[in-house]
Length: 197
Image (cartoon, rainbow, N blue to C red):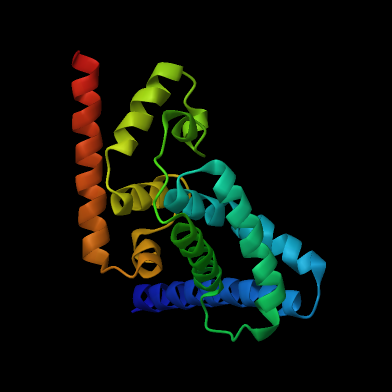
């Protein structure tokens, strides 16, 4: 009985902390909407890396990703006053980023190819010191479909949970999990094949 009470108390505390974090994030947006530049700076610091990786996974070009990243946070700054608390401020920011990516796509009328140079500079890959290893991994990532690459990058580089990725990409969790697993198998097979030659 004591153990059940302790487990319930721990779960309640965990829920309270998750809720508190959501409130802090939403408070940053609400404060940004009131012109608080410190709140905007904190919001960028907390979510910037994840937002950039998400944008890069879509546009596949660091220069375009930089532009869209800046446009996204300028839009966040100007639209934050209209933000309605929903408990998912990062999803709101991702929606803005996705819209800018789609506008770029429509303007270009084609997706840019992800070249070795861009992949080589992708966040997360820069930690791999051996240039040949980076090239092999870059080539492997390039062989994945757009959706598979997004799932792998969002999970591996930004640390997003599969559940969060599913919500962001509007996919069932089971689809994200299976695509992630299949992508890793493809990458492993490709990398093992490359190492044998």
